[in-house]
Length: 326
Figure 1: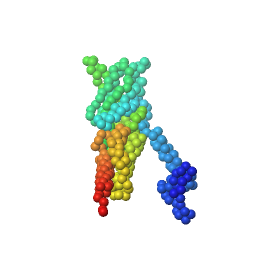
Figure 2: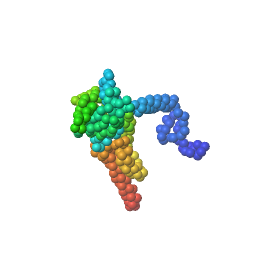
Figure 3: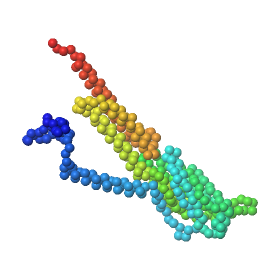
Figure 4: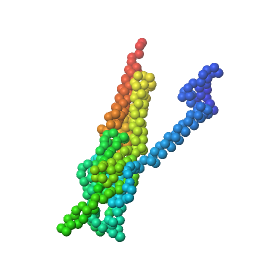
């Protein structure tokens, strides 16, 4: 072995002797033409991937509204804005902003000319919002039940149905209120809910017999981040298991540092699991199909490496203390 100007050892090869593998003879070398081609391809793939991800990210969290509009708006307008969704309790909050579209229902100063009762009905019951004559309609928050399976994270989808009706009331001589007229309801949607894509189907309009559905699905960024973290867990488990098998079968030398490395992976996996955005509790589908087996693979790798290290130390001590033959 020759030495360079800095005194480092350099493996020399004869004129007809093939050069060794770069990993066995590391030294500074220029990037080949093939290497520059690989770099260019990698940059193009990275730029394309980032463009697609940023485009999908900018579109997420929006609202898609389907439903026929009234040709001549009259009655009551209701703007539905999603405020929050809690898969753990199967509840969602909506903000309803009311407006009067019929000029005959309000005074010149903007107050209601007649009492108006608005009913918001869902699967579990009905919530009634009352406005007296002389008051001004405003916004109200309502809580509605949702149907979905959090265990299907990050591809869980939740649905709910609401029925909104409005009645103009009339005060009788005895002071009671009776329905004077059922008012048409014009539904619309606006706003954004972070981490969720919302689809509203208002084809039922204000008809109490027709459902108006709202669907929540996980946003693209949530799904991408969850898939990336799960892929990292799987990759770590595969690498750890392969290295442990190579060491246990004597195909690679045993290094004590492997024990610390495998231990750190074993304790970092639950932290990665808890880093999932809006992740479900333990016991979801991702745990049964992936996380449990990843944890088991890393644990098995650590046990194999520990057993291999113990056997290696035993053999070393046996050879060291073996009596010499005369």
